[in-house]
Length: 105
Image (tube, rainbow, N blue to C red; front, side):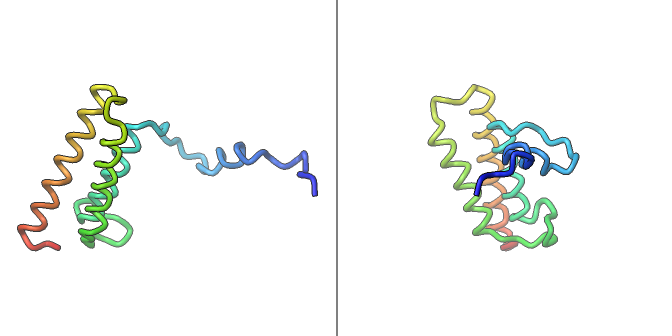
């Protein structure tokens, strides 16, 4: 069956999914910050949909994902992007240590 020429192309329909919200463009910095926010939610540092429930294994997996990105992009990042990844990883790893030492698991 041939596609209906009056139907919108998948890309055009996909672009409308934002429901009128203005979203920032997705670039490397936005992606890393999004992952960092997910880790903070899992650490209970930022309230998510489930309240402030701590899920340390999920937080660690998200941090490991950022570390994997750091490794895979080594030599291909701008100085600013590299500093961002380093700082995000340091801060998140320190939060995990704090949670582990305080027994907030």
